[in-house]
Image (cartoon, rainbow, N blue to C red; front, side, top):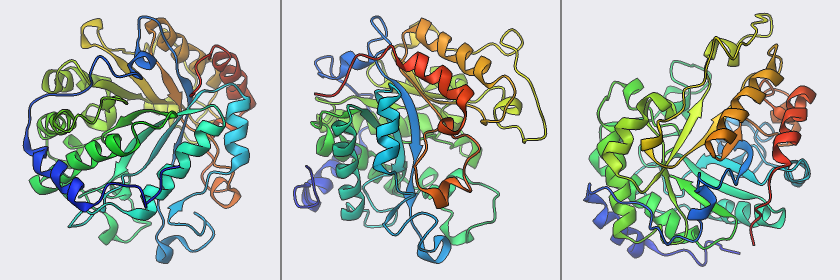
Length: 368
């Protein structure tokens, strides 16, 4: 097991950060042993679900809602067991990156231990995982909640979009994560930033060179030799911006996409009762010349009419393309959290689970 005692110290992190200024597109080596997991010509290979965690703030969260640890809400062993037993072989983890959000952006031992434990827990259950770095230098988890007021305004940090030093630190964090954890058998890939949203923060044109800088830092550190780098397009990983990203980063990194269209259906209120029609809402997928991609998030509220039809239609499209996929979201098994955050919980919808079990039955790959 990797622990804080074995992570590369501040000097190595600093060395990576020093080389993070290069904006040369880089990315994965064709010899990466886990590249085969993302081979769309022979895929899909990974099918599963998404889980989301963040740093815990005691003055905001108390001691129960997100648990007593530094990262919450806890994911119980029973929840992971249930996912594996249902047939999934992937759980995509969206959570805090291992560097501090504020200067000097040092590696955070609590987050490192959490990720290390997570990888071991996934491997023990035959699950691959992707690490999707949700927060880090200049970006807090509350960047996912613009215009909301349930948290103190001081916790809202999106300064990474205007601060080159923080962008360099984020690039260094991505390379560090790949080097630190890349040899773990359960780690299938690292998403450099989960749902980049520079355009929505009034910073159009920032993400593509920033992403190229990340790819360059990864290449300079030879950090993707064992585990692939994944990058998402701007505007919350929308396919519409995939071509801009590919042009900036080159052919190496895998594109990690999210799709929640039509939004009116996927995020409807319980009383809306909006139906779904595949013919009226066709799924937009990347063009073949955009290279390897994966659909690492898609889904709808569990009470949506035609939920099973929607899931079946979307999964069929990913399967036809040979793309790996993960549906939003899996249960944490932590009751105080699930009692309040239940709207898109796959495990709490029998209609969804019937579709998921059937789709996950095609999985054959498992971590060594």
